[in-house]
Length: 290
View 1: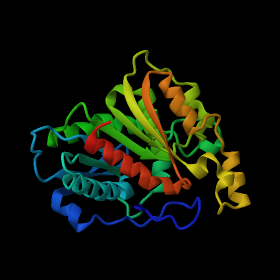
View 2: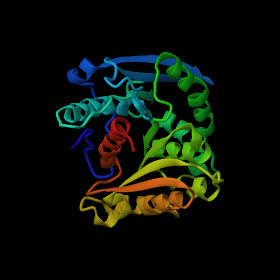
View 3: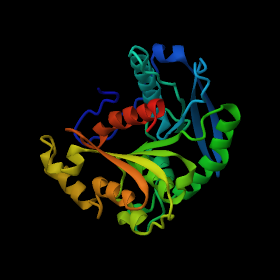
View 4: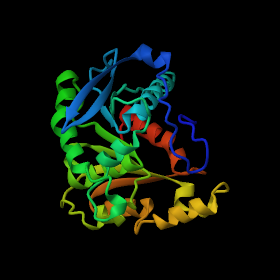
């Protein structure tokens, strides 16, 4: 199962935007809307099921960060999973509305913009290019979601936010600060090293934050020395960025704070190679519940 090619161990994501397959176009109406917010430009991608659900239930809404790259991956994954479910006796699945939060750029992962938008403010020169998570959240909450809710009817009890790496950090940021806004959070390989882990140490969790989360991490992220392809230079960079808390420990910490959390270790995977599992998990959650 490989939805995104990563050319080398721990490499940067491929910057070519993957296409949406013809089969996915058959079941989804694809569109986008450009928006401006505080002198920054965004592109909101939308995939709406062409056919209404046979049981008349409203579909789930799956919000995908890094939309330039991961929106088409999610749409393609939804088509495959829905087709598989349709061929399985006594199993039904409802296509979700998929919303990709992206940028009007031709690269899959606009690094400057995502660093700005997906990270929280933290002291130190190493974190100077970030810090816009609170403002980006306000854009999502006050502009994007009202626009989506006006155009599409979705199930308010099945609202899902998904992100990987910096986008996983932003997903965690929303969970810790605005838990009530989504019902389930897919947090892939969150960049817990950002701000030296202050997002967790400074968190003020509500007493009854009844939400759920799935946290994913690659086997070679949890244990970089086990990666047969890692170089000494890359290992040193990883160790310099190490956080006081691992993704597995984050899961336990969330469970202790009333968040129903589940940890998935992705076998033989490094940071970039976790992306397909994050997409598959997010789509499966939107199709089948959690």
